[in-house]
Length: 178
Image (cartoon, rainbow, N blue to C red; front, top):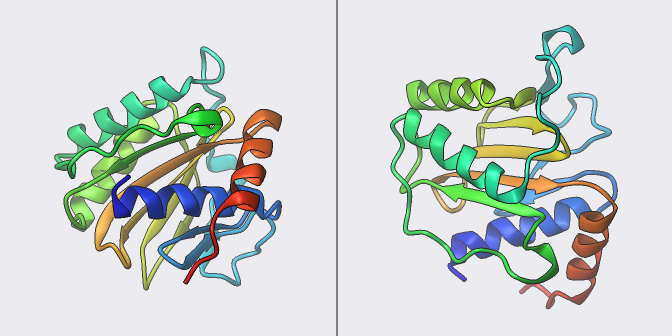
């Protein structure tokens, strides 16, 4: 597993396993389901959300394809592909990593391309590491730009009993950091 993929996977594991909904990428806390904006996240007004996604909950393969298609539509270049997640987390994580940080225009184009594919923006975070949180069905996507790995990173995690339990088990069995 590449270093950036490893950071993204363990960030997703830590985020879901914390039960409070916290997601950490590259050591930076990105979001918490219970936060009220004190952490720098600005929640989207409830009325600004798009209608629910037609066709039901997307599969992991569908989410991965949507991330890649949205990035391509925004003119972004992928980094070397990471191996797909295996084991019980295989259906719980989808990701895409760019070959570096993206400029503001491409970030706006990425957000538009994701919304066109049924993703709904739920929150935004400014500096020091700009990020956007979106949802689609049981999937939560956060994309960050820059940070410790200095790349555009899209990490989608699926919620629900099966994935929540898999994330908790993965967190409980992971090696200590340091």
